[in-house]
Every structure is written in structure tokens, then in C-alpha cells.
Length: 471
Ligand code: FAD
Image 1 (tube, rainbow, N blue to C red):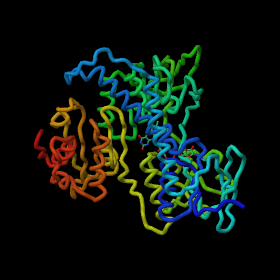
Image 2: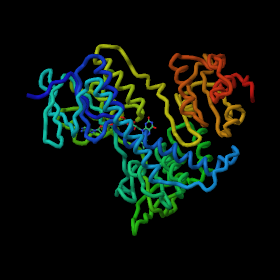
Image 3: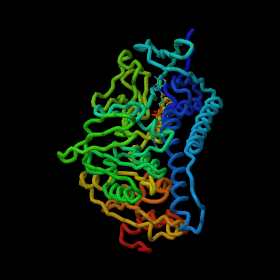
Image 4: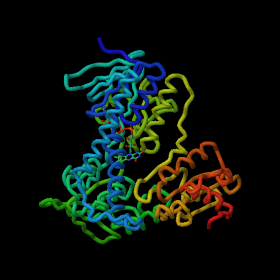
């Protein structure tokens, strides 16, 4: 007889594993099927966590080489041990994925290793899932099935992945030697983060972007500031450049491209194609089960309960609408599980922050200034530069600024964009204020500890009414 569950989760990424844990906390009997050997999904295995481990290690290396002396620290000849650096990253990943396995055990979630698919149309109250594992096929039955299979790197037909020289982020997280010349196709956050890693570790890095700017979805002023900073750090960036093809010979790739009608070529030993990600639905049996996928985006269509058009079949995370981010997937997972249990939780997609972990970092919440203009919203701007922030000066990290956008009439905080040190940690305060529908005046009146980087946020809020103290 098939094993029976209240909920079968397919995919153990931050969406799936968090949904499984929350549903178990709420008393459901839960199974979670994952085809990868380890839990944690893209995020823990080949995404957020390994990339941040490499960013942190490479930043320390860059600091040791070029920054420590400014603090009066002489370290002599700084050497890179890439194998040790990669082993540390692998250890971080292992520790965290094993941690998720521990949480599954604690919450009595039954894990299955294998590839899951919906077993055709639902019958009455029962949904069936076929799990193809090492020991053959097994059928699970559940009252509800959650699809949380995430996303995969989108490729370019002109530049097909070969897994060796033309690669996705997965391989670029694990090069066994520093490339001589890494060509990054796509100036989004993944390309810029991994480009930064390898540039700091000694590679020549060239970024090729089709659009007229990097970070096409971000605030233009912030993108421009990051662009300048990355160029200063040694990256070369080509905008308005469309890749048209590539040829590989003796470990060298020649990428052909077109810039304003002129042919250009780039030659390197590694090409990272990072032009976005697309929902991953391969082998899930959606068509057979009658689950509707949006034609234009490839995303699974869901209602406010995260339910697809097929009763009892739900979807969350990168698979559905909204930003493809781990914390958004987690929030989807919690809201889904609570709604399944009859609670009225929702996710406020307007206050999902986004972070780019370059150095300095970029962190944003809310619309860009361009989007506000386009939407005809009247707004006020307050800006404060880290070069006037005491803590930033003490840290010797004075590059960047905080930009606060507030409604012209009500003063309500509409958006905050930060380019600067530890922007990733600073953005949480902006998200909190926006969740509580706070105003720039509210931020300006809140006492911020001194000396902290967060004072720059308060000063930017004060600057909305041109009353910043330190500028
Ligand atoms: P995923 O994490 O993709 O998990 C889906 C899981 O489902 C996978 O483990 C997959 O093996 C499994 N699966 C798929 N099909 C089946 C099947 N048929 N049967 C069984 N299992 C299946 N986001 C951030 O918020 N911050 C960051 O700093 C960040 N950095 C990133 C860096 C990189 C290099 C990449 C690639 C991504 C990064 N992301 C980051 C994005 C983040 O990883 C994703 O948004 C997040 O993992 C999505 O979670 P998910 O649960 O929807 O899916």
C-alpha cells in the first residue's frame, strides 16, 4: 500500500524545506522528496551560500593584499590556497545542508531521495506522486502536493553550456584554478558577484551586457555607482553588447558579439553565462496532471492560497510569480503552510528586499526612482554619503550612499536603495519601517546607535526635508 501523508513537498530548497517544517509544526504529516543528494536546494548547494562563502573569502584575500596596510597591519607575502578556500566553502555548504536534515528529523518530516512527478490527474481527495529513486519507483499518496522545484540557469542559444569552458554559476562556484580570463555574459547580480570573486582572486574579468547598463532591474543611480566601483576594482564592463556566438579551441573560447552594429570579439579560458534563471518543471508531469504553466514566463500559475488550477496541488518559490530569491521562497513556504492550516497569512511582495553581495554591497526595497517616475508618483529624495558617516570612516569603507524615497505629500517611505558597506544588514531596518507603513520622519526621529553605519539611513531620512546634520 502507498504511504499516505497530509502533504507531499517536491523539492527541498528554501521554499520546500521551510514549508515542510512549518506544516509539520502545525501538525501535518509531511513527506519531502528531493532528487539532489543533499537538502537545501539551489540556495544551500549551488546558490546563495556557496557564493557568499566565496565572496567572503575572496574579500578577505583582497583586503589582506590591498587594505590591511592602511590599517597598519603588515602581512608580508599574501598567498592564495584555492583548494583550501574551496574546501571551506564546501564545509559551509555541508554543515548547513546537514542542519536541514537535522531539522527534518526533529520535525518528523519523512525525506525521500529521488525524482518526483505527479501521477496524472487527481482522484477524489487523493493526489499521487511517483518517486523514482535508486531502488526503483515508489508511489506516495497525499491530501496536498506542494511543487517547490525552483529554477535552473537560463542559457543562450548562441552560447550553449559545455560544462567546461562555457559554464553556468554552478561550475563557476567550483573552478579548480583561477581562470586567466573569465568572460561573464550578463551584468545581473549573479554575474557581478561571481565576477567579483574571480577578479579578487586574480582573474582578468570581462563583463558583457546586452542592455545599456548593469543591473537592468535596479535603481539606475545605484547601478551606475556600482559600475564605477567594479571598474576601479579591475573588472572590464562592456554594455550594449549582444553575444552572437562562440567557438572553443584548445581550452580557449572566442565569444563573438555585436556592439552598436560593429563586430567585437572576446577571448578567454572560461565563459560564465549568467543571463537569468527559469522555472524548473522538467519531468514533474505537469502536463499529464493538467497543471497550467504561464506561457510567457514558464511559471506555474497559482491563486492567493498558492493553489494551482488543479485542486490540492500547490506551488511556491522560484516556480511562481515574484522575485526569484531565497527569502521570498521561504516566506511563500510559511504562508502556504499556514494557509493550508486555515490561517490567513500572506506575503507582501512589495517589501521583499534584494541584495547584491559585491563590495560595496547593494541593497534595495521598494520601487526604483525610475519606476516611481514612470508611475507618476510624486516623491521626495533624501541622500546621505558614507564618506560623512563616522563608523564608515573608522572602517575605511566610505564608498557609497543611502537613498531614501518618500511620498511627496504623506512622507510615507516608498523605497530605500543602499550602495555601501554592509548594505545587506542595513536594509532590514528599511523593510521593517515600510512594513509598518512608516514615514521618513519616523526614521529621522528614531535613535540610532553611534557610531554605526545605520546612522547613514537616519541621515538620509533627515535629508528628505534637507535637514541632515552631518552634510
Ligand atoms: P530551489 O532552491 O531551486 O530548490 C528546488 C529543489 O527542487 C532543488 O534542490 C531541486 O533539486 C529539487 N527538484 C527539482 N525537481 C525535482 C523533482 N522532480 N523531484 C525532486 N526534487 C526536485 N537568492 C537570495 O535570496 N540571495 C542570494 O544571495 C542568492 N544568491 C544566489 C546565487 C546563485 C549563484 C544562484 C544560482 C542563486 C542565488 N539565489 C539567491 C537564488 C536562490 O537560490 C533561489 O531563489 C532559491 O533557491 C529558490 O528556492 P526554491 O525553494 O524555490 O527552489
